Image 1 (cartoon, rainbow over the protein chains, first blue to last red):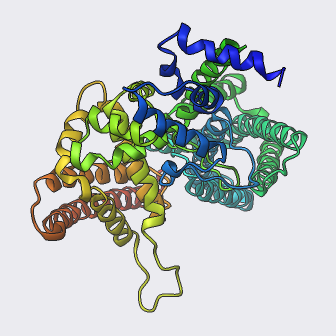
Image 2: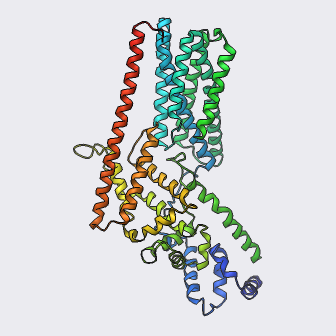
Image 3: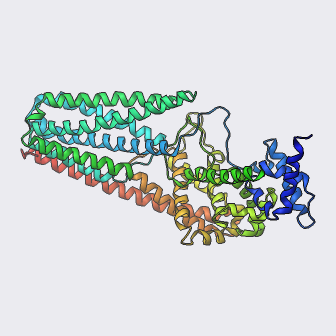
Length: 271
Length: 255
């Protein structure tokens, strides 16, 4: 008894000193309302409300609140912790950029192919190989963003037109320019994928640190991103083998294209 | 000792709140299947608002309904101050819970099990939209005042955002997988259709809202006719362009 006596006294003192205290009980009904209700006798004007409050607080101590039955708060027993807003917005913009990037890649190769293989028929198998790989990547990201409800970029028609013009324009400038375009684009895209893989692996490490199992969703995504990055870098090697460095204003061309890529990525992350 | 605990719990509540409401405000973020989804409303808000919704048929979307709801949930009248936007929070609660209820209230037969033709995306969208409209049925006599509040300049952006989320939810549940520009046109046209039908329904006195259904079907037909016309135009332009380029290439023009 002795240790509880000062506590009881201090609680009993509160209503006499501060009359507006009950106002606060909606903010924290569980922690402070219970002793307060049990000790102070209900005043006449507030009696009905006090009873109802006391009944809910006793119920909520058992973690069964009858009034929240229609509340849409699902409680899965042993799920992973929810993604933070930063994580979901990172994935949102990253996947949107990936889809737009693959769209552009498919269109660049598609519009480069006819003028290029007309002048250099020996490049036909290489162009077909690269195009097929990009089409596969594009399909993968289309399925992924539809599944995860990521908004596609609003600039879709703009990137569609820009990529077609870029591919066709560089192909008309010749084999070296076309390959320099491939080199510039794949360099940017490769480093972009690298960044994403790094972030995802970092999250996976933190999840394991918290004792949670890394979701198959993430594992699959990291695996696919690595495979796609490796294929993009393989295209980069093919471009360099095919005299990409021999393009006439090499520095100017690659820097303009790389700058354009970075701008497009920046815009696509946002809209 | 009591004041310390008190202030801790007060600030704790204040701190926790934005974290809970943040995911609702953001649009169409990455949807994970293997991670918990945070609940759309904090527990206290949800218990007050769900109790208040039961008073809406009698008292409308008013502060009175909120007050009665708070009493029913065992809170003081003044606890409605927890809801900074007052009555609009009640309307928003209705919109959000009905949107999230769609995925359980409308079930489609899984493919292969049903004999005959499987349900197309269009039929699914129609079924989902009508189900959502019908969910306003019990409070339809109070819905006009809610629409008036939603149209207030302060709340209009939030209302439009919620309408967009509803359209997104319906297309997602209808298993639509388009991820190009039509993602936007589909959601915009469904939003317009839904908003028009919603307003029409407040005037509808027919049995079981059969006139609203007819109104919606007529608008849907208009939109799909318009959509297929635009699609045909696009296809024709693309085909003609490609043919022209190929004809020029076959004549030896270096393009």
